Length: 187
Ligand code: HEM
Ligand code: HEM
Figure 1: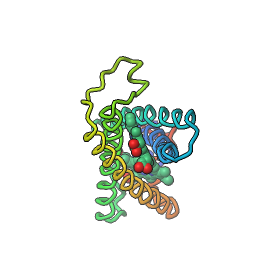
Figure 2 (figure 1 turned 90 degrees about the vertical axis):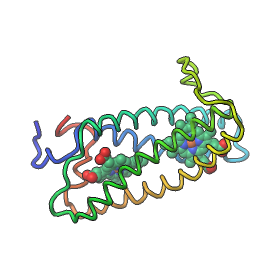
Figure 3 (figure 1 turned 30 degrees about the vertical axis):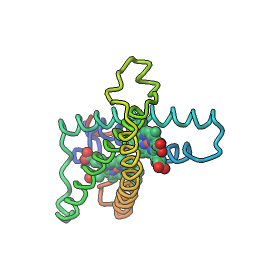
């Protein structure tokens, strides 16, 4: 099954695949969310970016739920003994904070849209009810949470990537726990 030495200490194939799928989607969602709010953007372009952002965000939400369900079923591989305990503790806390912030971002975005009375095209086409009451004040609150959480999520992603690149540079095997997205190791 695991052809690479130490491969049993890496994340399962499903976890690795979902990690990189969500990573690419989230990294793309940031600039789309920022650009779509720019003044002077042509209306059709703005509409297309909004549709992409909202519906892509809903897909991210579903993928994060899937990741969490999978993660609860299958715990993370143990850290190598050589890793200081405090570093392992910080990594675990940062990972759960990433999951939490992804949920805050997607749910606040959804509430902002629904409370404001706007469509989420994909869900509307599937006949999924809004589940959020129309309310301008709720929409404003959710908008504020969305705008603030994006700063925390953006900062944490930068720290996370810096830590990952540091491990890659040190060659201590931590990066290989989550790479490659496809092939090799447990499923
Ligand atoms: C939006 C972008 C990203 C998000 C939200 C994210 C989220 C996460 C989460 C939640 C975990 C923990 C998995 C678990 O234990 O359940 C993780 C692990 C990991 N991520 Fe990311 N990630 C992102 C981008 C990246 C990028 C770009 C890199 C590399 C340059 C990277 C490298 C890693 C590595 C090496 C691990 C495994 C750490 C370990 O073995 O403990 N991530 N990521
Ligand atoms: C991880 C997923 C998401 C990320 C990273 C993200 C990121 C962003 C960013 C960076 C902005 C610009 C905020 C600003 O400049 O103030 C934004 C705005 C916005 N996002 Fe998201 N978003 C996500 C999910 C969603 C979802 C799921 C929805 C709705 C279904 C959504 C709806 C919106 C809306 C409507 C705005 C404009 C807010 C306003 O009225 O100013 N987002 N998002």
